[in-house]
Length: 155
Image 1 (cartoon, rainbow, N blue to C red):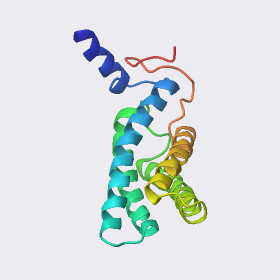
Image 2: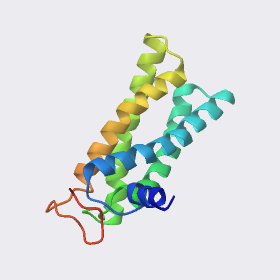
Image 3: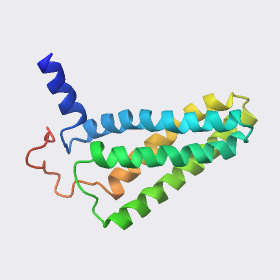
Image 4: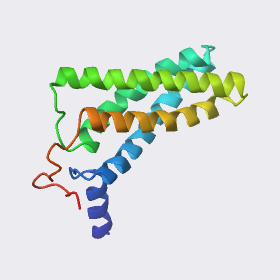
């Protein structure tokens, strides 16, 4: 049991520069953010709000959850810019992700005929790839490609 606990801590908590581990954590965080996003979409749709409008509100909730969890658990290094610039870039990347999500949801729902929640799932996978890659490259790049003392290393 102690080994399992240690493994969970290393996989999810200990700061790392390992991109594969960061991607795993981002996926884990992304699932949590997706639940917040899709849950908001679903609830607002139940209240009669059009699915594309509901998707915007859901996306905002998801981005907020993702930002808080990603800065805490995914990226070991501080952003290469000020906190204000970090939030600005994070929002800009997220807005592109929102554009992709809205376009894909509309395409899959209106043109292909998929149920809007299924369209959301497909769009979320594509937006996740964009968001993680862009944030990693623009904000959290490991400049010298060196591990940080006390973190899981790049090996």
